[in-house]
Length: 200
Image (cartoon, rainbow, N blue to C red; front, top):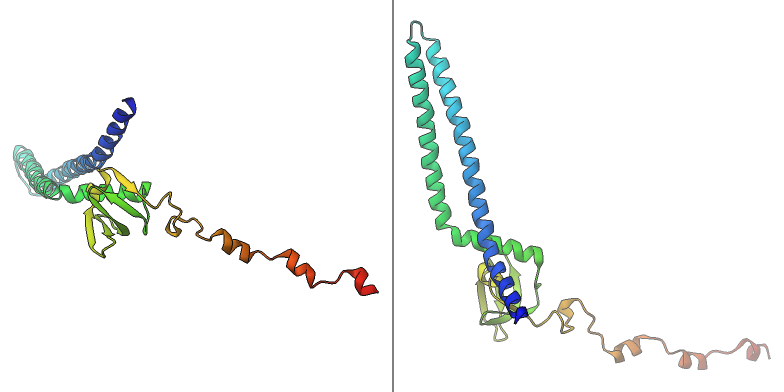
């Protein structure tokens, strides 16, 4: 019972990990946009104030007013750009999730090219792992494209990793082949003459 709960927890963690990575990237992007906006608004304020300071007899209170106006206009433009970027990010959330899952698959590598695996209801041989999808080919030569989010977030069965296939890096040479490849000392000794026999 405890093992089943632990396995379910691990599956849930694997499913949530791409979502966590995606949200972390969105949060990092928002912080970067905020810092850039504050820096640009400060620069706009200083630029307007310094430009108005070159004008003779210009009211000092108006300098501060127009400087603040430039600051908040810059912040407004940055906020609009940030909102547009957030909308694009939400529209591409599935793509970013597949990208994060693809990175996880490349790091942990639960399968390799040539392995026969089952993901969900799809069974096939892995032919390609890209950043966004995994390509499988069935025994009937049917191509299956599975998004990486579906591969990472579901239980995966690998039929090749312990089967001794050549694709898994294990030797497929049978015992008979190794016996043939090994020289037979007994047969080779029949054609050799011992030093005592040749001396006679």
